[in-house]
Length: 369
Image 1 (cartoon, rainbow, N blue to C red):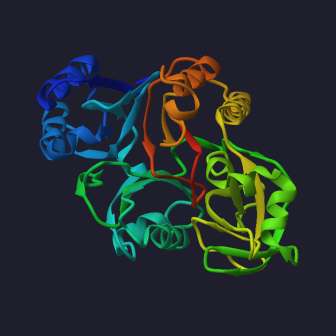
Image 2: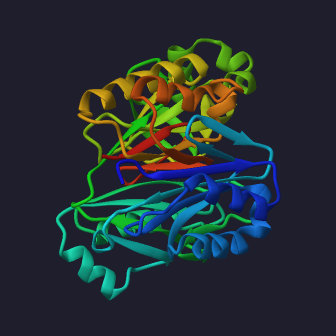
């Protein structure tokens, strides 16, 4: 197939949603091997019969996906309603392997398959209740030669299911692609640095005591202004701490929220542990910066494309989408306005994965070429 097959539907019973999606797919070519599936959390309790119906209706046994409080299908963002989106691919079965519910090490069969290929892109999902999510990602990246992992943490008002052929609830799951599958991926940070990098010179867990050997709050106020001291709760909605990723040569940083300041002690507190000698940069994160950065990212991707994508997966943060871009699916519409029309699937996540790192407030676009 030239482009992957896509079907999506909303605001119906789960049976009607499946029927509607299958009808949109039309005749399924016999070489179709893999399905991606994203459902809204309104369908949590129906996930198992949905997967069974999709397997029966398409004849495809390999399915990968998860649940989201918002899901993406081509140029539509579905929120606050039952919604289902699926995409079918004809990738050679020898060139992908399902990762079913990994909680620690990968099995020997998967180890053997990985050893036969020089590079692997993995699409990974998992739930926020997993305390070892970051460790699982680190372990997987370490075990797999030349791993490039993308994906996201599911979002739900109920259980956080993910799919890797069967329904998963623990660990992480997903799919690995060999170097024979032509994939590119890029990350939109959605934030703008508002000062220079600073060295964390003293910290206790998630409390920043000193930066550059000066009181941490003094440095924060120096870069962001007095608003952070006068009304830090309001400022924490758009001023964030960016922790520089040690293993990246691209200047990437992971956004973490400010959750408190102490003017007397001259310290501030964020939503992650800090390490001495780690670098930090303060950032502004709002709709304008998110839109500008996504547009820059898409133009970079466009310059690498010789042909339209066959299909894509877009995983964006719950704090983006309608919060920063607007309520008329503006975030995904921007993608298509720059890259053109192609099948696109995804969801709004509790955390995003790109190049083996866990991020927040980002958008991760992965394209099959």
